[in-house]
Length: 436
Image (cartoon, rainbow, N blue to C red):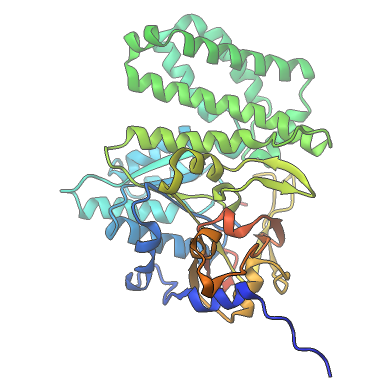
């Protein structure tokens, strides 16, 4: 007679504590999301993740959570995994500038990662609540998701043309080199950067650092000519270009097997800094809904095959904000995910393949949800951490040690990496990927 399978204390805890949710319809009533109110508390930044881009269920749930946090909890801005420099025209559009149809032109050159529907909702919300301060939009990422320095350098050049035209030859050199390898994403730009002559790579980095050093050194001079806000925006755009340039080098070294520990952190460090930049400059009392991949919002370091690869945005935000930062990861147990194999002939340097999910791996948070026979639901993992345990829920450590990353897994202590996990149960790949 075979022995009964051992019980998993965390699965039992999850079965007892996960809260079922009722809807994946973005237009549905929001009452089932009320458990989020306790989870969010007084947090100033609430991050809503996804284990893969291009997933319908994650996009819909994010839209519902955005509605809930704005309409019922007083959140005032959406920050998105989208270029910092490219975000300002979208903020203006969300606040009512231009025509409704203009959004398509704004997003025509960008990867369709799902920013369009939240923006449309914000624009409509602002239109119907004109007596209230508008909900804002903020980009936080390096330019073009690492695909090109030009979206960040163009506003820097415009700024210097007005305030410090003597530096324009240096800017033009940087933009000439940047244009030679610009792409739609890091997937096609990084290989093109790698084909540059070493002298060109070094000239780009040196010129960017010289510009950045000058910006910081002569701040009073620049502010006297262009005001503080204009200076702050231009400086942050330049910092984005510098972080993107560093990321090209870090990724090249990583793929060559000689990367430094945590050397890919530059992008996430910039994203975290951008969130804090916006938080400081939005209206007093601003509260931000932050949408980015799970691997960006988590609060524990990222490692692959035992090598410390990077420190995520969420770790920097937790260090800066403490409990005022809340990270909610989204995942699923069945369905399909969007794998993104590299293809330099594709528009953005990769294709999107709908890959059927296999049964969840033992030890994963997905296996715990599946074994607990839970559908659409959310679990506040803070209640399973050592400091929150009572005699009734002792013995849960260490909990799940991995979470889905597309069709693979990211090995991470899930209880420490996320404050909550929302399981949509199933996932389907978007069919709205025209031009990919």
